[in-house]
Image 1 (cartoon, rainbow, N blue to C red):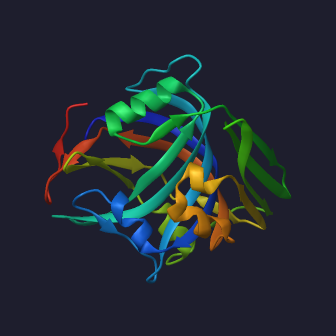
Image 2: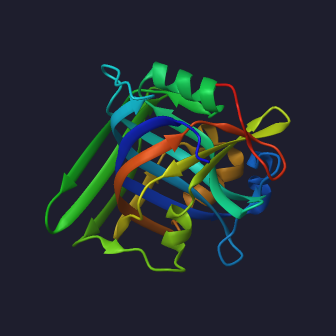
Amino acid sequence: MKTRTFLTAEWRYLAMLNYAVDPSALKRFAPPGTELDSYRGDYFVSVVGFRFLNTRVFGWAFPFHRSFEEVNLRSYVRRLTDEGWRRGVVFIRELVPRRAIAFVARTCYGEPYTALPMRHKIDHTTETIRVEYGWRRQGSWESLYAAAEGQPKAIETGSLEEFITEHYWGYTARGAGCGEYQVEHPRWQVWPATEATLEAEVSTLYGNAFAESLAARPASAFIADGSPVVVRRASVATGASPTVAEN
């Protein structure tokens, strides 16, 4: 049975830069009861920037907190349940422009949110799309940028794009346990990126373990069109049977 809805929103214009990394850099982020998920033997992190729109928490819309930017670094895990494997994401760091949003996410989900000044620029025509997300840190602006051409295309079955986008669970460490929540959205369409850059001091933003990998060219990059989403209330995963947590 599905747990109660925590949040509804739209995620739009997702710029997704995906980097192959040494799994040794990721093991400490995998919560108890999960294991690292791989694509054809390779392990990935993604730097993702997107627009959070029409946000409601438990059905309530809060002034000045309905629409905002988010940029996150995430890795991929899976957890075995009685129904089979659940494939999910673990967030290494998440940036948003509102302190209240960061506080709620840290308190209710144990997510590593940080509030920083942020901005975005989206230029979308019938021929091209350019998406940029920026955040101000240590007195300087850093940014994530992707550009593409034409119309979005359906994600191919078995592709890296499918692996990156088709993870519908979130996992967090909760003491010695594992927090788990479900994210629901339809299958997206994507534009393969013709340009993609990450301009940031990675060692201080995400740690030295990611500095070399994220300085390289992404293994893949694309822009997803996005959709309405539903985020379910967090649970505590114990063995193969999660039980609803107190939020």
